[in-house]
Image (cartoon, rainbow, N blue to C red; front, side, top):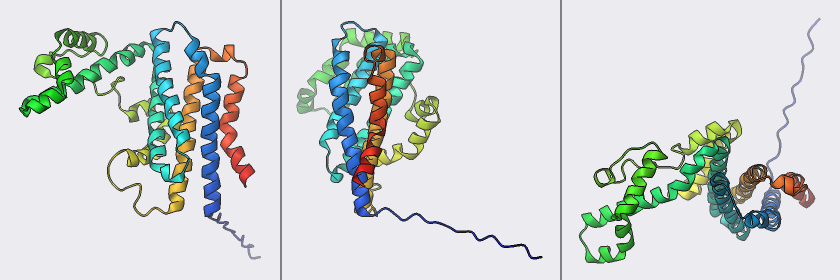
Length: 286
């Protein structure tokens, strides 16, 4: 008896048409709108009402405020032509989420987080001062007088050296080394390392999504060449969804670490609903 051959049916999903892609992008944008407004109404006022915070809490709140302000900007980007800015902002929000996760894993790092602005401002001032010194010009001296003054401020230079030694574990003589030994980031880790430490999901995001955002942050034509208008609309919608994902992740961290969930019983539930909102909106549009 011959064995009966089994037929194999290959089902190919049709590519979404332009109208479907447009509705996907609209649902994503409206998800950003709703998320921003909810957090503006129910989370930000609570954070602003906290009169005293530890250095760890201040670091988390500082990162969260930055992320929230980026969401405010995203709400204003209401056209698919804004896809470059949307993907750029989503990239920044992912970095801020990684910052908050790093702090959550090791609250002692908040000392680095709060000290780094002084270090980075001094690095920039030194680079400007050295540039002006190499190009003797009265006009440049006048234009960058504040940076030159900071780079020559002995008290601040000593404070930077002490902070680099005590907080970052870096011994340097700034007068001789200038900014060569300064750390390049507050965590002393690059984004890839931070994402890998954070877990598989964030590592995947770094590998698959972060480069797309970088196409629109840096120079070049990678994000534009050969892409159809539907591709741009899709990139716009995807950027909004990625931004929301980072925003929600940051909010869950701030809610847990500052005990906002204890003060607002419905906050956790409402955040979960906001996570699923774009999908519900898309289904409604279709």
